[in-house]
Length: 71
Image (cartoon, rainbow, N blue to C red):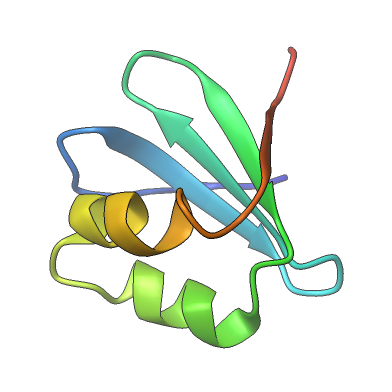
C-alpha cells in the first residue's frame, strides 16, 4: 500500500485503501500496522486533522482492530 508522509511526533506515514477500508500507519520507530474497518470519513478527518497523532491516539487506536505488517 502506498503511504504519504505526515507531520507527527509518533507517525511517519499513512496509507488508505477505500475498497477494503484498511488504514495503514507507519510509526517513527519503523513499525507498520493496518487498522481494519476504517470508514472513508474517519480517514479523511484523520488525514486533515491539525493534530494527526492525537486523532490517532484518541479516535483510531481504541476503536479499530489492528495487526502488524511483517515486511
